[in-house]
Amino acid sequence: MTRTEPASTTAPIPDPARAQREVLRVLVASQILSGAGLAAGITVGALLAQDMLGGTHLAGLPSALFTAGSALAAVVVGRVSQARGRRPGLAAGYLAGALGSAGVILAAVLDSPVLLFVSLFVYGAGTATNLQARYAGADLAAPGRRGRAVSTVLVATTLGGVVGPNLAAPTGTFAETLGIPHLAGPFILSGVAYALAALVLALRLKPDPLLLARALAEREARAADAPSATGGAEADRGRGGVALGALVMVLTQLVMVAIMTMTPVHMHDHGHGTGASGLVIALHVGAMYLPSPLTGWLVDRYGRTRIAAASGVTLLAAGLVGAAAPGDSVALLALALVLLGLGWNFGLVSGTAIITDTVPLATRARTQGLVDVAIAIAGATGGMASGLMVAATSYPALALTGGALALTLLPLLAVPPRGGRRP
Picture 1 (cartoon, rainbow, N blue to C red):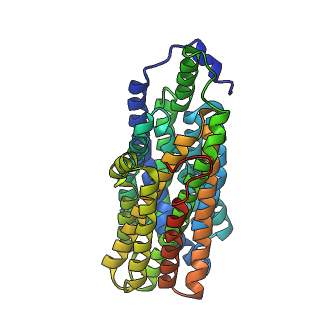
Picture 2 (tube, rainbow, N blue to C red):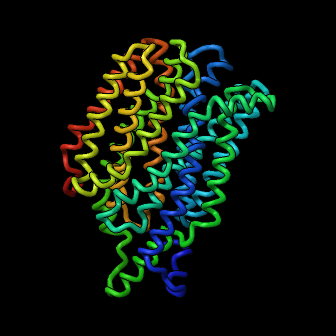
Picture 3 (cartoon, rainbow, N blue to C red):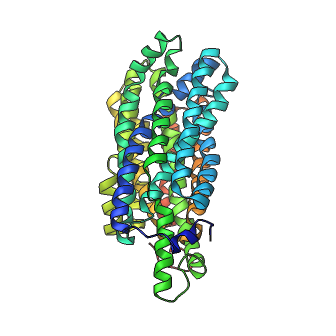
């Protein structure tokens, strides 16, 4: 039990339904802003490294670094949220992302690869925080509506995530007027967006959803004259579900990051400019988040594991289309990236719902943070391996390998977790 919980016995407890609506409104506002922030690294991170290093052999390193940075941030945000609530945890994470963006801009001005890589690591905190926010949306949601609550937070990222990549060229031009290299321009937008997201959460995320959920659990336990349903046997029963949900999200993240990272580089090598790659990434980010309301409804209506299985099939289709697409076909590459984003969305929403269903409140934020560490490590692995694999083989080979790996979800989902039924 944390030190913040005893306050629930003396302070009046807000109506949970009303509080949930307010929490979702604030989270939506912050996600719109942070969506623009996370798009910068996706759109030009690999190109910036390629420009500094003069080759593609380490083009996957930026993605690996900011996803590795997000692993550390996931631990920190999770632990801060566990001890003090979602508000300080999420606000601190976005502030770190803003500082990382500023570091990337300085690295580009100084032409310093070392500073670039350190800054990208710090910048990854924004990505981790953007994902952690989905858990905050589910803290106060009824079990039958958790998929939709998660999806509401995710879909809010769409606006910023789609607009951000399409501002790559204009922000690059603006950066040049300030004496900053063109490719660093999107990080100006990123730094401002993350800083504003941190401010919104720090000032407006009241009541804190995790702390209120704990207070409600305590009140219900006292009314029933029973031990609080925040740990004990519930934790033991949930271990299989945690492993299953984590596995779904880890595999989908690995495949998505690997293929996504090398697509702008692949397009650049075939003569496409930042405008074309920005459009493809914008469509990809849109597919990652825009279908979330439908996905949330499907998860609540048809079950977590069925939609997780659909994720594997959709990612396989993305790999097949990406492998077959000619390098000069923006349309087919865009279709592959749309399918890639959709498959990731299926996996993230279903996996998050599985985790939230099975983790007790006493350890919820900490466990969620650790799960997101595994997701971030998977993303870092995919980002690093993608550059090496394309350098050794080809982009089509990468796409096919990713699709085949995603398909391994199907037999794993067919086996119920130990000690329980399939979610």
